[in-house]
Length: 108
Image (cartoon, rainbow, N blue to C red; front, side, top):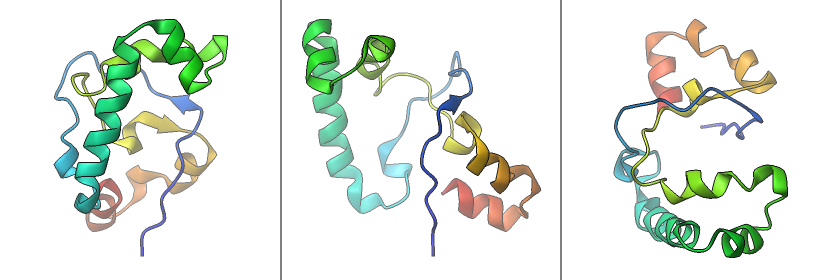
């Protein structure tokens, strides 16, 4: 059984370099086509007029800068969720304390 942790509000800075996300390497590979379709639509929206993307996505002024990040989803460097997110759930999980087998399972 997998328990999926929701993203938290705390995030590490994005890596400055590295590989983009490879959708086929994510868990639940049967969702690859759907993920690709959704990310393609989102990046297309966010590469267009900013005001339209902000309105369509219902972003508050404080989150409007996320449009630029979304426009680069397919090409921006990516890191594993366990390295990106922070917060009480991720701190309680304490990935660094897991056995090699458990850590590998958590990353997938």
